[in-house]
Amino acid sequence: MIMTNVNTVPGKKIVEHFGIVQGSTVRAKHIGRDFMAGLKNLVGGELKGYTELLQDSREEAMRRMEEQAQQMGANAVVNIRFATSSVAQGAAELFAYGTAVRVE
Amino acid sequence: MDILLQNFDLVIFLLLAILGYTAGSLAEKRHYRSIIKREKELLKMAVITAEGSFPPSKVKESALVTGSVVVSIDYFKRLLAILRNIFGGRVKSYESLVDRARREAILRMKESAKKQGANMIINMRLETATIGRNANKKKTVGSVEAIAYGTAIIMN
Amino acid sequence: MQFTPKQLVDNINVSKSHPLIELLWLLGGLILLSGLIFFILGITADWAVSKTPIKVETWIGQLALNEFPAEENQSLGEQLQSLLDSLPEESPLHQYNFRIFLSNAEDINAIALPGGNIVVFSGLLELMESENELAMVLAHELGHFAHRDHLSGLGRGLGIAVAATLLFGEESAASSLVSKALLTFQAKYSQDQESAADQFGLDLLTRRYGHAGGAIDFFSRLSEDAGNKLPYLLASHPHPKDRIDALEQHIKEKNYRVKATEPLADKILPETD
Picture 1 (cartoon, rainbow over the protein chains, first blue to last red):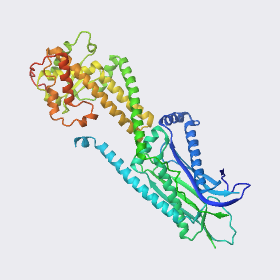
Picture 2: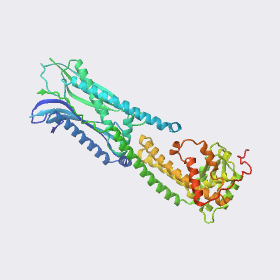
Picture 3: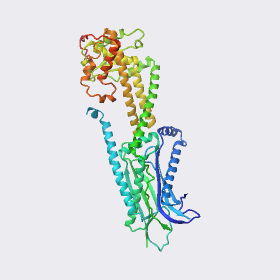
């Protein structure tokens, strides 16, 4: 599966469009992590637990989007965009969407 | 009877959870049925996130179309999310909330495009906002707002 | 370029698990977690209590006493002194300097405050019908001092509040949920303490009067209008009926005799000024 965030897949020709595909996930870290993040907030710096959370969520959102594209019979997703929202305190919502296409 | 009166707040809490569960899952099922039905009706309307290029002779008109919706979570699912926050992991109870909100927003955008006689929507973008700050904070309204927008193309 | 519309049958973005099953898992985890926290807190609190010198306790007690509008009572003090005199030589209770207060309130209760202060509410006194009954109540409170329950209760309560706030933040929904769960454990623990204090009280009463008469009279009067047992599941005290059963069992085991009770010399009432 080819994933791009431009209009086309460079070097290839889009022969068929299938419409939009989307993948999303809401994830939370256990309270131990929340507590450590609160402590880290005192001195600043990278919140490793939350970086990990964000990364896991992004990967899962991408995987879900890819699966939708596969179900449609596409072999590439172009013009992918990411969006986040804070539906819940301490939880991250990661959302990926793009256009499923077939390229040659 | 005494035990009911002595643990009044517990009883209210349980009643709300049961009410939230039954009413919430009923509403969700009905919403999904309507989403799937309308998605089938509007299947012909092409929506893509890419820009696409059109020769000037083919396009009659183009216009910005939007669709938005605010969906709230039920009491029971909020309880699940609060508990899930303690242990971490996938907050399953919120997945359907954001999914419903986005699909509904896209559908409303498509409907408004169809009214204008458009054939397709290009360069679609999606945004989410949370009006009640956080969907699981006490005393605030837990809701998710989704906005879908794009450019509708009316062909000759 | 051609557009082929596709309708997805399967919704990958929503997990296919039943919410009720998830609820069960999460609730089970919550109970396990609070049990663990409570267990650790309890051990720490008990350890801290056993290390607290009585001087510090007296100081805390003075602070707590300021919260109760109560008068030191002479005739109650005499009752208490006669009980203290019948304590065995080696009892740790002799280290305390006991003071007894009478509070003009309708609660049917007596409280053991840190530092050897006992507060008796006048609502309780009005229900007393014999000297032995009153002695049993006072001996029960002395039992709390002997086991140092008054401090560990305080320590645990404080620990629970601090732990819940630290872990979940002050105003969050999870914090109130967890502290509710922890307090349920606390209620069970406090019921065990009450039963232990009852036993201590019974033993002391028998030492004082030579028989166990009057030990259960008060509780049997209470149990008549105590009603159903269910609300007592979460209360700090066990159901009076259960307390009577436990006391009777104890009387039987130790072969205590039960004789007639002595009436109260004169009703002890709050000194009005």
